[in-house]
Structures are given as C-alpha cells and as structure tokens.
Image 1 (cartoon, rainbow, N blue to C red):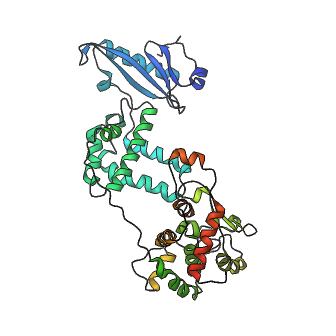
Image 2 (cartoon, one colour):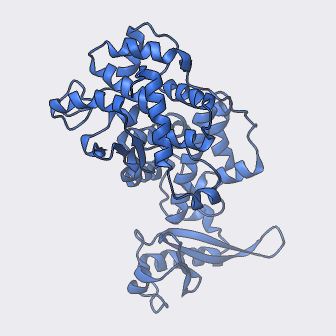
Image 3 (cartoon, rainbow, N blue to C red):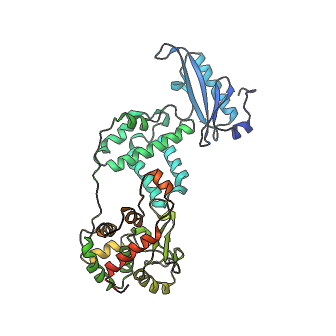
Length: 393
C-alpha cells in the first residue's frame, strides 16, 4: 500500500515549476527547465560505503511523472527504502521495468516528427539508429548503457564513416537525454563524457566541394540550355541565374513571387539556415517564368504529376544527357561565387548574402538587420547579363 500524507498533491505534481520538490521520506519530484517531470528517491544502503568510506547514499529514478502517478511513486520509493534498509542495493534488485534503448528511440522519433523539415529527414534520423545502434544496444535497458556500449557502436565507423558516426552520436545522446528526463537513467550522458574526454580518435574532415563549371564556360552552356524546351532545362536556367539550391527552385510556388516588386521570397522552412531569403528577379528570370504561368500549376516547375514538382535528380540527369560530365547542379552556385570574386567593387558580404550564406559572427549578425537587397539586386542583374549575353539589359 502506498504511503500517504506526503507534502505533494496531484495538483502540485502537475503545476510545480522547475526544481527539486520533496514529498518526504526521500521521494522527490524533479521538474526540468524544459517542463519534463520525473520521480527520484534518495536512499542510504545499510552497511555499504562509497569510495570515500561514507554511507552509500544514492538517487534512483522511478519514472516520468506523466507515466508514474504520485501514489505509484510513493509505492516504489517505499520498496526502495525497504531494500536499502536491508542492505540491498536497489540498483541491482529493483523490479522496476526499464524500457530498452530501441523503445525510447522510436518514441523520440515519433515525438520529433513534426519538427523536421520533411519526412525524409525524420526517416534518416531513425534509419541511422536502426542500422548501427539497434543491432548492438537496441535491446539493452537504457539504464545500463554507459561508455563501453556507446563506444561499441561508434568505434567501428568513427574513422571510415565519420560524418555518419557524428550524426549517430548526436542521435544516441538525444535518446539517452530523453530517457533521463523520464526517470529511466541517472548520471552523465555517456556520449558527452566520451566526447569531452576525447576518447575517440581525432579525424580530420576532408572538405568535398561540389564540382563546378568554370564561370567562363557558363554563358556558352546557358546558350545551349536555352535551346531546349524541357521543364528541367527551364528549372536549370532559373537555378543558374538565381544561384539557388536545387530544392529551393524545384519546390518554388507561385505565391512566393511578387512580380510587381520583382522579388522571389523563399520561406524559412525551405531554406538551409531556417531564415526566409529574398531573391531579386531580373528580366532574364521573368522571361523564363512568364510562359510557365499558362500551365496553372501550384508549383512553378511541374513534374510528371499534376501540381507536383520535378524529381531532385531531374536537372542532374539533364546535364548527363547533355554530356556535361563531372559537374553538379549545386556547382553553379560556386561558379557564381567565383565570378563575383572577379568583379570590381563587389564585397564578400554581398556575394555571400546572395547565396543565402551566414555572414559574420553572432554579434555582427545581431546588428545586421538588412539583407542588402538593392546591392544584391545589382549583382544578380550583372550576373544575369553575363550568363545570357543580354547586353541590352
């Protein structure tokens, strides 16, 4: 039977703010700054000493307050105290059901689905864990996962697939953090301990640049591209002129365009930096866009399915059909950047902002409220003239 007469009530459990709130007899409700609520009990194991020779006093998680009620927490706390009084360490004798790593990971994946930009990102998050973590630690209780188990997952791929391993470590850390917030773990996150101690070998990242066409060759290529009627050709022409990313162009919708102001505003959720980006439109760009309005599609560059954009591979496959080897669509952004560097009186800031890159330190960005649209408009207009050979523009 549960003990009654503690300091906490059901209403307090729901509404207390961040901190550690005692119920009495070693039972505490811990409210994290995030709002997560969990139970812990502090017991002193009879006859056992810690490394300093003092009585062994330990905190044990009893579960999240959203799962474990106040009376259940009191019952479990009483059980732990009885074991400790008999000289039994609850850590090794508790009947508490601790979920395994895979159970918590799949729950975290479901809870975070609304926060990802698209379903693909969410699937990548769980797929990494399915491939590398679940086979080795998936069935282990989250309370039993420490540094050896984390190293068992990360070491085999840390040097050979370093970027994947880095992301895997971040995702494992998130799962273990959530497990702790729900009261299923105690102590430091082993992923952070390993990182801070620099246990894993240092890997020098090799920067891999997208293969780009020399900017001097772009006008001739553009002239050949303009002779084609395919939708992929129109999209690639627009991508080249705007120096935008593939996904930004292919997912463009008509409501994003203001032809009176000659602006295309890409919403934040479609930008890499999660910040809306204004792209100045030029005469050459609108020449591409105007005929496409007649299709009355919801998207600008419609694919094979009505009101649906083309595949991400459409423009790359066009390059292959044109026998343009070793060049990526993303590389046209590099071509633009190289060209801008050669132009007189073009600052690095203007060129980088045209690519929607983050410029300056955090403090500098806090004071830089302008996106320098008109200066960028001049630069993009000059690029459009250069690429198309439209000397009359």
